[in-house]
Length: 214
Length: 214
DNA sequence: AATCTTGTTGAGCAGATGATCTATAATTAT
DNA sequence: ATAATTATAGATCATCTGCTCAACAAGATT
Picture 1 (spheres, chains in turn cyan, purple, yellow, red):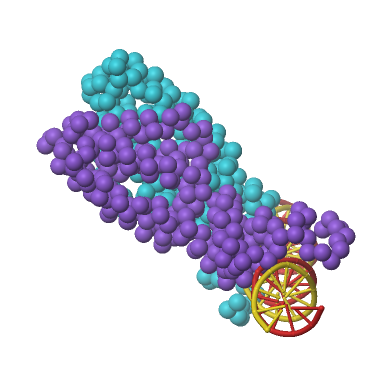
Picture 2 (picture 1 turned 60 degrees about the vertical axis):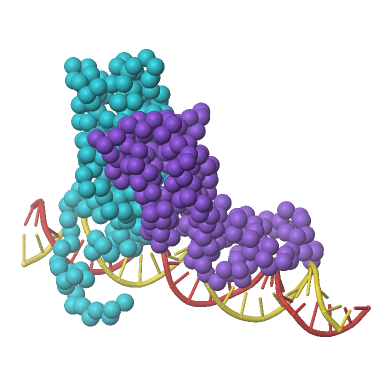
C-alpha cells in the first residue's frame, strides 16, 4: 500500500527484525492479541487487522489456528478459564465466617476478576452469539455460587423474609451491571466500586433480616 | 440455485405474486424485518440474508436505504424511539403518590417495554459498537429518570441512610439484568418478573428507611 | 562453513458482501 | 386500450475475507 521499497532484509513494517519465534511463544502472542482485538471490535473482526496489530502476516495465523473459529474458541477458553476459582464454593459456605464477610470477600475478588474490558466484552459478545461456553459458565455460576449462596442466606434469614433464587440473581445482576456500564457502555466507573458492592450486599442481607455478624 | 423453471410470471419463491408495494409500506416492511434480523444475528448480518427473509431482492434494499449503515441507523432509531416515555419524569416526581407505588408503576411499565428480545439485543449490540444513540439514551435515562429518582428518595430517606447515585444504578441494573439473562444469555425468564422487580424495589426502599406508604 | 529444519512471507484463490445499473413488469394516468 | 411511471428483479462490479501454498530465510545441527 505504501510502496515501501525494501531491501531483502527480513524487516517488518515497523523496521524491527523479529521473525521466527518459538512456536509456543508465538501462539501465546497471537492469542493474547486476539483477546484484546476481538474484545474491542467484536468476533467479526477480520484476521488481517489482527495480523497487522501483531506485525505479522495474516497467513501466519493459520499456521497456529486452523480456522478463525478455532482461534475464537481458543480466545473463549483463555478468557473464561480460571474466572471461577474452584475454592469459592467452600469459602462461601464456611459458616465459621459471617455471611456478610463471605459475600464481601467473594464479590470483591470476583469483581476484580471480571470487571475487565476483555472479559466483559468477550463474555457479552459470546453471549449474544449463543456460545456454548457462555451457557456452561452461567449454569456453573448458578450451581456452584448462587445456589449455595441462597442456601446460606436461607439458613440465616428471618422466617418471614426468606429470599428466592431471583433475589440472588438480583444481587448478582446489580453488581455485574457495574461492569457492564463501565466496559460495554463505556460509562465512567463508580468512584468506589467496592463500596457500591458492599452497599448492595448490605441491602440484600438487611432485607433478609441478617445482621453483619451473623 | 434450485433450477426453478419459471414462466415469465412475476412470482416470488413462495409462489405468491406480491411485488410492487407502495414505497412507504415497503420501507416499513423492510425496517420491521431488519429489526428482527439484526437483533437475532447481530449488526454484521448481511443484506442478502435479510432480503431473503423479506422475499425480496437484495438490490431492492438499497432503493430504500442508500447504505447498510443508513439501514442500521434507521433500525437504531426505530428501536430506541419511544422507549423512554416523556411523562415518566413527571409521574416519578408526583409526591401525591407514595414513592413505592411510583417505582412499581415505572418499572412495571418500563420492563414491559424493554424486556423484549429486539430491544435488549439491539441495545446491547449498539452498546458494544459504541453507537452514539446508545450513549445518548443512557445519559438521558440518567438525567430524566435516575437522577430525579435519587432526589425523590433523598427527600424521604432516613438521614443516616441517604442513597447515592450508585445505589440507584444498582437498583436499575439489578432489574435490567433480568432482561439481559433472558434475552442476551437466553436463560429461562423468572416465573414472575414483576414480583422480582417489586422485591428489588422493596429492598432498596427498606434500606433507605422508606415505608410503603411514604 | 555447509546443510537441514521449519517459522514466516507474499501471492493468490474462492466465496462472500456492499453497492450499482439496466431491463422488466405492475400500477396509474390518459 | 394505450402510454407513462416506477417498484422490482437480475446481472454484475469491486472489494473484502477466510484460507492455501510454494518459496524464502532464520536459527539449529553437523
